[in-house]
Length: 262
Image 1: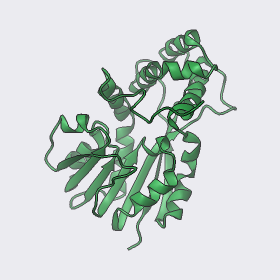
Image 2: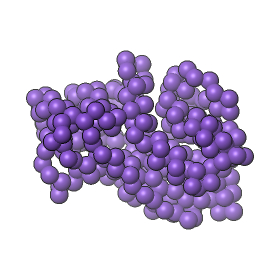
Image 3: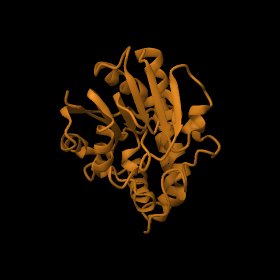
């Protein structure tokens, strides 16, 4: 199948009804883990931060409110959600980061659920690393697929496998590269590289379960076009996801980081 467009152009469109709420479901699931790691890495007063692909701005605003960093520059290719809630210390910039990164040096550069949609995460990690001030930290976060061949064959795993294949074939999303992020950080010249994975539980009515149900619905034509599942199987997976019978593993959030040499 030939790729047709990029993230946000064919589906997951920012102007689509409920898209901001869908993004916030992922934020409700992963923000605590993200913020805890950013603070452990030193984010705090005096820090100047760059949030790349900032979405609705939940991480950027929590950095200001909870970590009390001095300023955050939040960049996204569509800044409507960011601009909707002006916040002291938050600067919003609409830009395509693949061609236009903001000038400057930052104590923290953070990006989440962005690189996996781009054709060359290695190149982007190297570019983001050059945005760091001496001693600054780059934190890259993306999804790790846990529906491997060893995972049980359930409605959920069948639809997740079809979704990843459909997104790869249409907009180029490739989560198979995500486990290599630590090596990419080292190749970019960063030091003290490390990584961790957080896999939230799939519980009936939880934010992450609702996120995947809504994501599947928006990507339904692409999922079913793979031929791996049909509409009936996808509907069954949505019901399964919201039932106590679901005991599957959600995609994990891999957080990888490294520091710029002093």
